[in-house]
Image 1 (cartoon, rainbow, N blue to C red):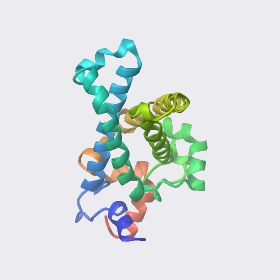
Image 2 (cartoon, rainbow, N blue to C red):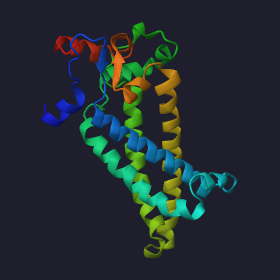
Image 3 (cartoon, rainbow, N blue to C red):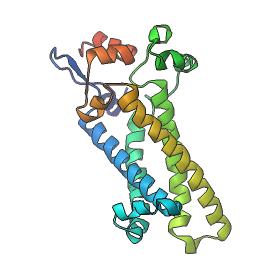
Length: 221
C-alpha cells in the first residue's frame, strides 16, 4: 500500500477516545469544494435551461453572471473531483460482498442488517455514487467545452454536446439528491463524518463493521 493511500484510508489513533476519525481535514476540504461547486452548477444550470426556474439566476447574481461563471465553476468541480478521485479509486472498487449487499439492500433500508455482509470504509451505495459522479463529471466537462466555445465547433457537435450535458446532469442531480438524503436523514450520524471528520464507534460498528474491525485489529482504536 503506497503512502498516499495510507494517508487517506487509515485514521489516526485517538488515545482511547470514543470517536473515530473517518475523514481527514484534506479529504473534507476537497469533498466540500466538490459539493459546493456542484450545487452552484446545478442551480445555475437549472436557471439557464428552464425558463420557469430563471428566477434562481437572481439569487446567484443575475443571468449574465451565471453565464460567465458556470463554465469556470465547472472546471473547479472537475479539477477537485479529480483530486478526490485518485486517492479513493481503489477503495471504491466493488467486490463480491458488495454485490451481495446490494441484492439485499432492502434489509439495510428497513434496518434489518443482520443478514448483510460486513461493509468496509465505504458501502456499495457510496461506491456506485462515486462512479456515477466520476462518469457524469467527465461527460459534463467534455460536453461543456463545445458549449463554452460554440464558435469553434460545428452545429452537430454542439447538438450532441447539449444532449450529453442534459443526460449527464440529470443523472448527477438524481445521484446528489440521494447522496444528501442518505448522508443526513437516511443514515443518522453520517453528516458528522464530513463536518467534524469523526464518527462514534457505535456508528462505525453498525454501518461499516469490517472497517471498524480492521481498525481494532491494527490497534488504531
